[in-house]
Length: 124
Image 1 (cartoon, helix red, strand yellow):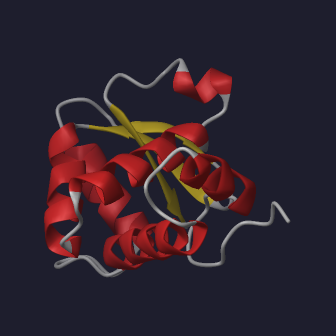
Image 2: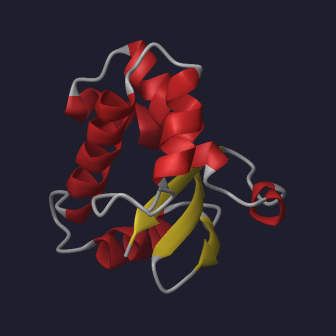
């Protein structure tokens, strides 16, 4: 049962582990992560996650890309990126904290070593 949620690259096992320590159910956290992925895929001015990551890589002072796989981008983004997503998704502080924790948990130890800001995993 650790297959990725089709709406997000964060595995079900990770969602379950984070939800166990959060004030959100597995379903609510999974829905929040899916909403974030959908928003990233359809952000204003971009046509895909690939476009969004390209924009961030050229616009941000520090390249946020930690690793790219065939399925996902592993990014280190500033808190303002998370604040923008949370605001646009109308998340509570608890939803944002749980979503951030799920994304951090989705990083491998090697990837986490390269995170200077806040981890973010976006499906490709």
